[in-house]
Length: 106
Image (cartoon, rainbow, N blue to C red; front, top):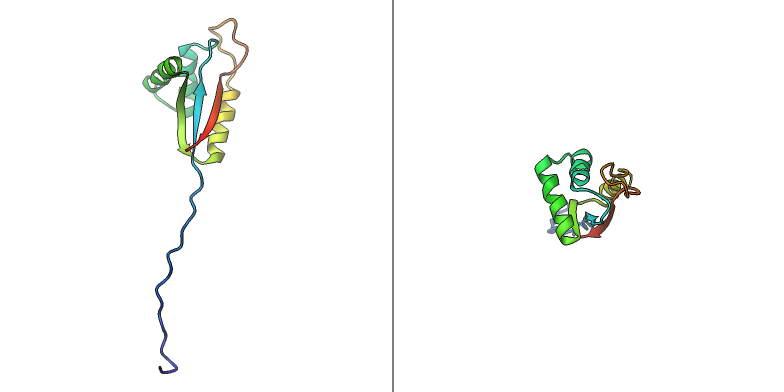
């Protein structure tokens, strides 16, 4: 080997660790109307009315519905906080506050 020669070795494959992904899941209760869910989905997530209607029906029938994700923990946490801060349903007199939701790791 001459002094000017360079030995090229193949690079080892570096594994990039992906950040965990999260879903925001809306939980059913008896104190919020379908209209509330539809409006919340439109205002917080920018969904069209039809998608809000589908989510309202799913949360009512299944007890929960995915409203956002998968995405980063930071954004999921923000969306969760927005749901919890959305306020009472003006259509339901017994309503005491916002709907509940949870984060789920994918």
